[in-house]
Each structure stands twice: as C-alpha cells, then as structure tokens.
Image 1 (cartoon, rainbow over the protein chains, first blue to last red):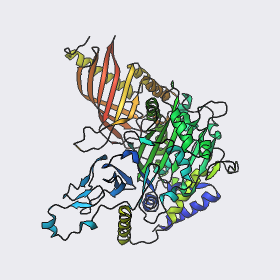
Image 2: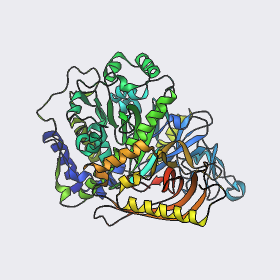
Image 3: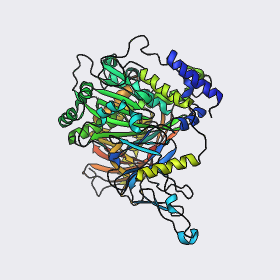
Image 4: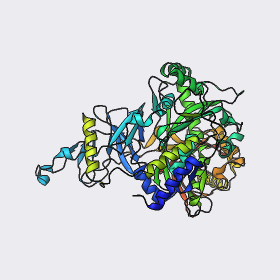
Length: 462
Length: 172
C-alpha cells in the first residue's frame, strides 16, 4: 500500500496537472516513489524488450529487463518469440549469463537443471536417484513473461496478466509507430547491439524529454546550433505538431521552417520512399511527407528519435532512427539502452551515412546526447532533496496560447506547434493515475501470479 | 625512418613521451593543440562489447560502436568545446589519463608504428563526491612526421559492456 504522504502528493499532483498544469517535483527522485513505481507502473505496463531483428534465427536470444526482472527473449526451435524469466526453478540462479547468443538449451551452472528454449525443463542431473521419479518436470518450466506481444517488429512484455492487449495499449499511437517502423517491405534491422550506459538520473527525464520537448534544443544543444548542426531558427519547433494518445504515449513531428529547403520524408533513399508511399495510408503519408524530426515516447520507457542530422559540421544531413530504453535501476539511476535501426533494403551508402550520423550525434558519445545526460543528472540530484521535492514544476507551456488542431489528419490529440507540454502532462498524468491505483488483489507473490503464468504458457503453447 | 626491424630503445622512449604529452594536453583541456597531433586521415573508434560465452569468437560487436570518429567529426567536437554552450564539459570534468603497459611494434606502413597501451581514465565533475573510472586498452597507429608523430588511428577497447560514465565526452 502507498503511504498516506505519497498518496497525498500524487492525488494533489493529479489535481494540479489538470488545473494548474504543474507536476510535483517529488515524483522524480524519491526512494518510496521508486518502490511504488516498480509495481504500479512497471508491473502493469507493456515494456519494450527487443526488436525481432535481434533474434532472427531459431535459438537466437538476448537478455532484457522489465524493471529488475530479467528475461531471456529468444526465438524457439519452432521460430516463435518467447520470454522466459532468467531464473532456475530450483534455486533461482541465472540460467543464461551472456547478453546475447544462440542456444537450443539453457543449463543452470549451479546444479545443472536444463531447459530448452521453449522454457521446458528437460534435464535434471541424477533425477531418478535424487527425486525418485517424483519430480513432474512439466510443473517446473522457466517462468514465462506473463504477457508477450509484438507490434511491427517491437517485442514487448508485461508482468500483469490482466493488462489490456498490446494492440489496445498502443492504440492510436500505432498510426505514428507505423510511420517509423513500417516504411519498407523487409522491415528494420537493429545494427549490431544496443549501446548500454549508466546515468545518475531518473528514467522519467529521458521519457519526458523525448515525448514532447522540442523547447530544450535551442539551449541544451546550443553548441550544435552554433556549429550549424541544429536549426538556427529559435522558432523551428513552431513548424511542428505535438500529439498524444491514451495510455501516456506521445510524439512531436517537425517539418522544415518556411524557406529552409529540406528533403521530403526525412531524406530517405528513393527505394524506401517508393515503398513507404505504397505501405502507409494516405493520411500517414501526408503526415510524414514534410518531416525532418520525429521524437516520441511509448509509455513508459521506450523513446523514438528519427532525425535528419549531419555527421559533422561539414557534411550534409542524413536521417537516422534510434530507439532508446530508459531502464530504471534506482530512483536516481538509469541504464540507457540505445538502439540504431535502419531499413534492411536501404542502399549501403545510406546505411553507412545513417550510422555515422547516429553515433556521432546521439548515443553515449553523441555530441547532442552528452548535454542531455548532463542536465538529467543535475536535475535528479537537486530534486532528491527535501526542500526541492516540495516544488511544483511548471508544465504550463502553451496554456491559453493555442487549442487542439482540428485539421490534423492523424489520431490522438494534436496541437499545431511543438513548443508545447501537453504530451508531457499527458504522460505524467497517466503515470500518476497508475501510481494511485491500488492493485486489484494483494495475494503476495503466490497463487495469482503462478496461475497467470501457467495460463500464459498454455496460451503460448496452444 | 623506423622499419620493422628497428624498434630501438630511443623509439620506445619517443613514443612513451608522445603518449604522456598527449595525456597532459587532454587533461588540461588543450584540445586544439591535441588536434594538431592528429593525422587528417584519423580513424578513432571505441568498439561496443557485449557479454558472450567464452566459445564466442569475440565479444566485440560488428556494425555498432560507442564512438566512431574521423578528423572532421573530431574537429566538430573540439569546435563544440570552444563554444560557450558545451554543457557536458562546462564546467569541465577533472580528468586524469593514466597510460601504462606501452608496447611498440612495427606498423603496417614503413613510417608507422603500432602502439598498444593500457589506459585508466579517472573523472570527477562538480562537487559530487564520487568518481568515474574507465579502463581499457588502446591500439594506436602513430605515423612518423617531421618533428614527431601523428595519431592516425586509435581503437579504445573498454573493459565494460554497460559503460559506467554518463557520456563519452572525454577523448580517451
């Protein structure tokens, strides 16, 4: 249960975000908020695990996290994507200790219990002698992630067996995800593996930044503005749309400022442009045609950056696509996993340029990203203190300035410029709603989750 | 001209002093001067490593890196630091490059040396009483030019998969 003080902060926060357009600073860096968030937010939401292109062959696996639980995300011998808790049913040891690889079986290094990549327990050393044939192996498979779903190559898991389907959860956001994920016939490829690094910052700051913050570009990234790598027009985000949907998702879509010629469709190669015009709906094509920057967040912690950017100060811009996971590992610490993706059918020159533009501007060494991490660290440290926590943070941009855009061809609630904080409020409001909603029943870690897990396995095997 | 058969004590001493001098420039923020030590065909790569089983051929990922720069992008980084708005390093980190285990061998070209060294990079920022440490092995190609050497290639293999500093804003 939530402590009364926490509940009061959150309930006031819910009223304030609606009435005053403010958010309580206490939600950023607080150990109790973090504890509650693990169960109430990450225990209920669909969390991104992997992209299907990371595990193309039977037996391929990667190890990924939902909150602190780690899962082996693999393609089993029948080609089906699975998620198994990486924990032996005997003593809980990790059965897989590599980050990625290919394996038909996972053998526990402690006592040798062995599971196939469907999760079934298939080997128990000295089973007959030690257990007298009384061990029913079918009851001791690796715990499956309660819900597993895939959308356009993105594999998500959810710890709540009663959560809505992934399809319903993504809802109207799918219209926009398609624009990023479904532009080509053969789809996207994660190149290599994600970069991983630790930042002493709360994960929500990354999610909040990507979901709607075009405003920070002019100041945070001013060094890059001065070098000509970011738009020099302080009003560049005026020429964009700011959209959010149910379940806390949102994005910003920015075109070129008037008079600045930029290529259509993020300057993607001709063969991809040809394919996307065939694959996407006319409305999606209309939305995507003028775009130079897409930034967004799928609640809670998956963000998207699809940007037209130069790899240095003397080269023309190339677009790149990055997904990033803001993985919480404490109230004041996250691991960032940053993925670079490119259309499998893109020409080699584009793949190379796109990779270079990505790795030099975003990611751990990126000349843009560096300054973001600096801000988020600093904010997290300051907001962990008792007096600072009592502040309200100002989320009032656009208040009384503009109304929702009636002419926007896409779904969701859209505003006609990207200097806005409607997406951020929507995200924080949904987060606070989850936080104040008590779990349906509190039976601890016993029967309920066991049955649900067995049910999920039965469904998966059916 | 150094050739494959002539890695003399004098060469090792020259290379060692070059590396120590380079470290001093980096730790005192003299990036423009550091850039003068870099060849125009620079390749500067920090590979991405993952945890793999011992039987895997390598733990270095193909196709993705933590950093992949050439001279132009390095100049961009230096120009960026010269603006008043490179917040990641302004105020600057306090850094110390500890360079050890220097091994000098002949390079692929006649005027080049293949130099390996171990790097321990210590970093603190602000008044936070913690520090970051990066450890790795550098594989350099140093090219002999009139009056010294130029860095033509550097690969920094870090001893981490999940990197425990918040950005790679420092040149390693």
